[in-house]
View (cartoon, one colour):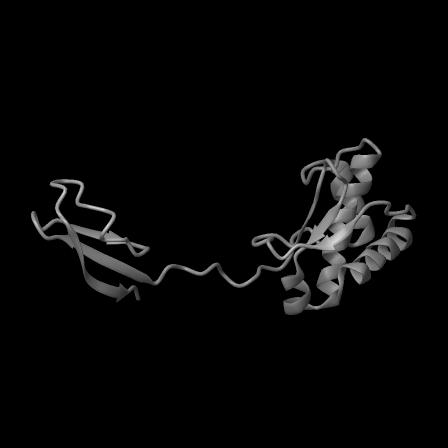
Length: 154
């Protein structure tokens, strides 16, 4: 689905479920990591996470769009548009939007660790990322560091 098709879908859902036009921009934003979509207060645009469409299909996408349109229409009419507001909860229930979206796969955990040791004092340092041993030195004695091990966590 393209951004233009998403725009048409948002406008259609707005007309059918809310009986009001959607006059702003709806687009996919692949940088969204932990949410299905968001309503932008300043520009009134709606951004949708494309991974929800790929993982859960069009029904989940429609639920997310209805949720974001609740924020949109309530904000523009000056009513309570936040999740805890009674206006929001009532409108969301009446249009059948999703209160929460399904979760995307868990964020990647860092599995590799790097162990460095000072060549002078012997102090060990464990890091998630590689360290440039030519640039960094021991914090104790300013000795040179050397990589002693890469290891994976269980």
